[in-house]
Amino acid sequence: MTQATIRLTTAQAIVQWLVNQFTEIEGQRVPLFPGVFGIFGHGNVSCLSEALEAVQDRLPTWRGQNEQSMALAATGFAKARRRRQIMVATSSIGPGALNMVTAAGTAHANRLPLLLLAGDTFATRLPDPVLQQVEHFSNPTITVNDAFRAVTRYWDRIMHPAQILSSLPQATATMLDPGDCGPAFVSLPQDVQEIAFDYPVTFFEEKLWAIPRPRPDRRRLAQAVDLLKTARKPLLIAGGGVRYSQAEEAVAAFALKRGIPIVETIAGKGSVTHYHEAHAGPIGIIGSTSANALAGDADVIVAIGTRLQDFTTGSWTLFSQTARFISINTARFDAVKHRALAVVGDALETITEFDTLLGDWTADPRQMQRARLLFGEWDDLLTKLQAPTNAPFRPMRRSCMRSMTQRGNATPSLPPRAACRAKCARAGGSRPPIPLILNSAFHAWGTKSRRAGATPWPARDRAGQAARPSS
Figure 1 (tube, rainbow, N blue to C red):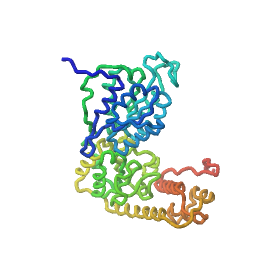
Figure 2: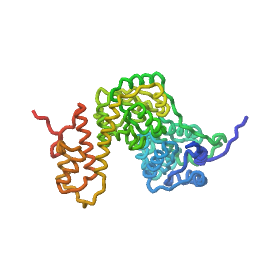
Figure 3: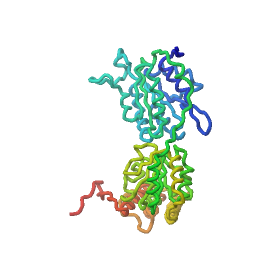
Figure 4: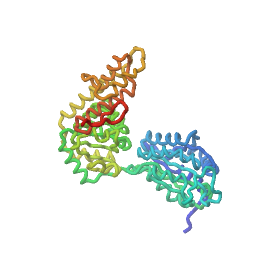
């Protein structure tokens, strides 16, 4: 039986496929690809641009002024939409495409979906070299688009119109996979874009995509339960995966029910409200003194949806070397980090089953009491330092800033940030600037690290060189 086909150029087929992909958000059917950011040149204007112009009512295109900024905007959109919708960014060949590499790296590092469509040199090579083509003398198959291989989860170069039949669904599945999420790059040689091909009509049927929710392995979950029950001072870290899984309420309820303080990473900020009863502040080198103090004393840490990167762990100086980690993550790569007990699964599904298996177990109530005390002290300090005043603004004196950046000069009787402000006031300044406040946070972090037994930062002399140990 002959299959029904429709004759389209490669560029037209790509666009027609994109407009027929949908997803569901809060029960409402919405386009999976709601729009395109584009800058058009000889690599994408005559074919892809023409195809996009014909569907502006369904797939609007916004012209960017810089390829990097428009691709970064697309990345920000994906984060704001909790990875449930994906923006497209398209550029011409050469420097236009290379301008998107930084955005691809950002999306890759932060596990965010982004579809990049860039023009490429002619597959036939007849017009070579085209304008601004980077030629590799020993390998003519290499173009600047190969630079995206290192910063994308999925990479392909379309050398024949039929290849999009498998490439586009694979790219989309990768971007929507919670364990493998990241940017996808599809390279489109200029001459391949214009080739007409008889595509099967079924390829353009509307499809409703859903993000999978993998459930955890029962044995690993049972091991996690046994480990948590041994904890005397447990701590829960909420990462970005909590938000992407829409597990905020479940995680917050779990922490409160089990008496475990909850702290947030940068990506996990907003997982709980600031004054939630279990919230103990943001963790890490730009976090809070309350969260970092709890991290230093914790013996079992439940890390949910976090990559445990250095800004969260303080380059692994925040935690005791004997602390044990239970890492709940959809990505196996992240879950197994740092000798953690890896529980690979969706945050919402996993925390729900975890809670059921814990039975009536709760942590020592003194752990939550201490967390609330520490959080209250930190919050009061923030309120005090951020309160408006009628005092005239005076620039920070260099002598004050220099003295505050030297370790050990903080006023002993005051917390680091209060000491910062006091020293500034004595020097004739007013409110400390943000860099100084951040420095005091780094000072507090270093102090806490030393208390936890970590190797301190090497002392430095006035020239910034590491001081030699005394003989």
